[in-house]
Image (cartoon, rainbow, N blue to C red; front, side, top):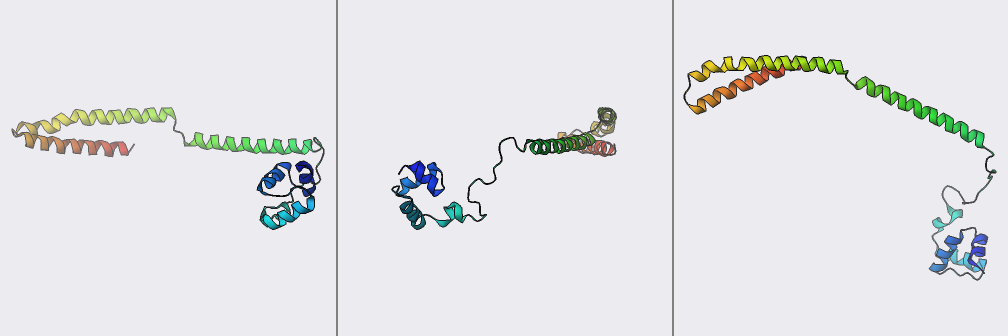
Length: 160
């Protein structure tokens, strides 16, 4: 008996019948093949023993194109909802963005704060440095004043 004919009678594909033949399934009759399958195969690997009850056979298959109107309607609804979701994502993204004019205004404010504090720095530190001759003491005075200046800048920028 040919493998394709045996497969058709067993209700399996000819590819599966060839795999089972390679595993040792006899191909001389349907009865011997079925007996071998019952003895040697895992019951869960057979279509009739599937948990969901799906035997793998086509039932109630309509002719192609018979239900195309419903298909197109479902596709239209799906595309509509995908477009609505994309629109919502776009609006959410746009709401989270900051306007360029606002960023430019804040940049000008930060620039003014930085310039003012840095221009004040030499006046704050020159009197203290002039009285010092030790390089370590000058370094300490500069470090303290730089930290104060940066703290003032951060506090003023943080209020913007």
